[in-house]
Length: 258
Image 1 (tube, rainbow, N blue to C red):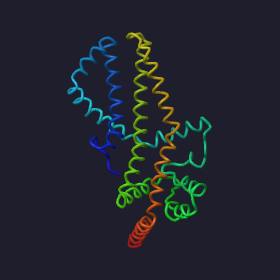
Image 2 (tube, one colour):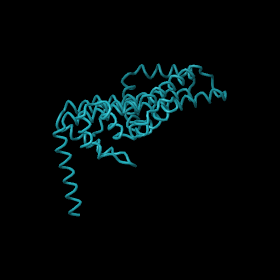
Image 3 (cartoon, rainbow, N blue to C red):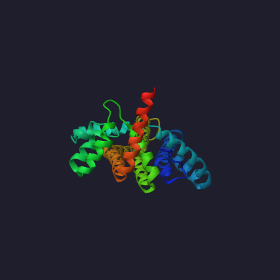
Image 4 (cartoon, rainbow, N blue to C red):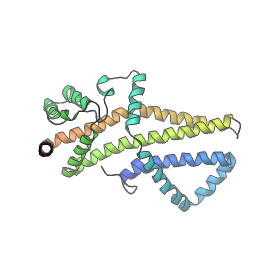
């Protein structure tokens, strides 16, 4: 899938907003350490009075930070989400032990909750893509590319589901970094190196709650992303079957010729 640029809605949603959030936190943290509370207010007031200069500085740095956050693996908050759910005893083994794209769990969903035709389609196309040791993300990307070539509306839905997952993952990393900056600020306060800032405790608690909320829902959000792709392949099952069968025959021919 292509990397969205800042000019696209997905670029703003996935990259720029998390990057801007982290940029603001970094800026406030550095200003607090360097200038203190009173000077910080004067400095921020002076800088924000020049909107043009603020935008020139904020936009490229926020986008850069967003791109750096996007390099973080979504599997890390995904696994942490499962760990948090298990601590809360909200453990359903069928999905909590799997890895993205949860092909095994999709089989349980198709068998237990969806019409028999969907489960037959799953056995014919998706089930064989399950791997014991490694997650088959390549197959999911293959499905997305196929669907984008045949249905623009379905492709837009898949991209939005993917964008939501990526946005939450990047905000998770931004929150973790930001809460670390708040902790450093609190330590500096406790050491008496500057005047204490009680509001930092409030900010810390807000960020902590946000992180816990993400951990409590991120696995389900990624499952929804995969289920969207599965539903889309079923809607275009004839095209998908032919494309998958052609790809399998091509692979077999190449293996025999080799």
